[in-house]
Amino acid sequence: MIREIAIVQAIEADSLLVTTELKSGCSGCAQQSNCGAGIISKAFSDRRAEFRVAKPAGMQFKPGEQIELLLPEQMLTRASLLIYGVPLLALLGTALIAQLLLGMSEGSAILLSLVGFAGSFWGLKRWFQMRDVKVSQLLQVQQMH
Image 1 (tube, rainbow, N blue to C red):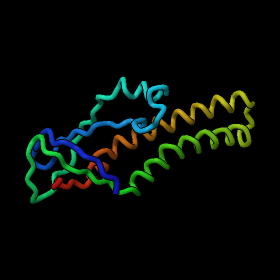
Image 2: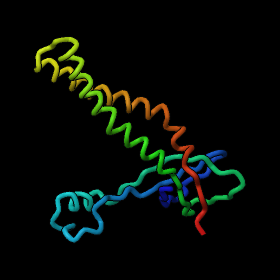
Image 3: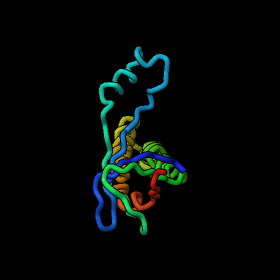
Image 4: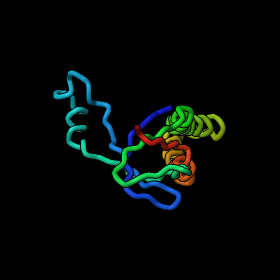
C-alpha cells in the first residue's frame, strides 16, 4: 500500500474534502542547492492538492484532523503503464501502419505518428477524467493514532 498523509478540510454527507502537500523528489540530495531541479522545487514548495474521498462508515472526522490515505500499489502500476505505454505504442504503431500498410513517405509517416501520439494523450486524459470518481473511491481512509 502507498501511504499519504492528508488533512480534512470539510466533511460532507458521504465524502471528505482533503488536502495533501505535493512533494518534490528533490529533498535529500547533497547537490540540492546546485541542481536546477532542486532550485525549481524550492520555488514551488507550497503546493497542495485538494480532492474528495469516500467517507468510511462508522468513523467520525473533524476539520483539521490528519488522516492517512492508502492506495493499492497495483493501481499505481496500472496507471503508470497506461500513461507511458499507450502513447509509445500509438507512436510506433501509427508509424508502422503509415509506412508499411499505407505506403506513406517517411516525412508523412512521422507527422501522422506525432498526431497519433498526441491523440493518445488526449484519449488517456478523457478516459482518466471519466474514471476519476472510481479512482478516488479506491483510496482507503484511516484515522491516525
